[in-house]
Amino acid sequence: MTDNLEPNTIWRAYQIINKKDLEMAIELYKMREKKTPSKALISDRCPDGVAEMIKPFLAQYGIEPEVSHHLLPYDLWLADGNNKTDEKKSELFKNPYSKKNKYNAEEVQLGEVHFASKAEACRYTELTLLEKAGEICDLRVHPRFTLLPAVKLPNGKKLREVRYTADFEYREGDKLVVEDVKGVLTRDFGLRINLFCRIYPEIELRIQRSKKSGRSVVFHQEG
Image (cartoon, rainbow, N blue to C red; front, side, top):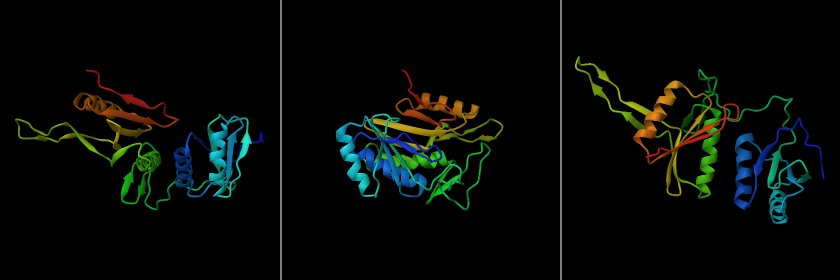
């Protein structure tokens, strides 16, 4: 058993209950770090069945997990031995055309899809894995919803249609879910989601917040 969590090492924590969770943890790690993990920690309170599932699976990658009493029972921590916090960490998604917006979020291009931030791009990889696993379906990126129609004023001027463009849309069981990843909640965004909840009460709106920004929020329209 080890008590040394090597604080200079960058660890990624996952909760493992079944093999599907284990496969997703490895894929998420590889997508985020652009490499395969070389180190792993499991809890000394990990249930026998889960530990017996984890060990041979990690052996495929040449990893022998160490046991620690610092972790929760279903925790799996992954790391790369060469990835240290005192070294310049490689970018999550390298993009020669990346730039930062006014809220200091770096824009990312993944294939033909453009994302406003790394958090949004990372959430996209998570949702694609959930879709492959059958947890969700019909995943769409940047769906648009009309909030107010275009109108022509008596003086001849035209007011453009007001739209809300979300980050993602998908089905989770019988629910249609629209999701937005936000670090900063602006006044304009607040007005748009207020209108959205009134116009589309059948859709569940989820606002995913970063750890620095606060907890995630789910909006339901009450009739």
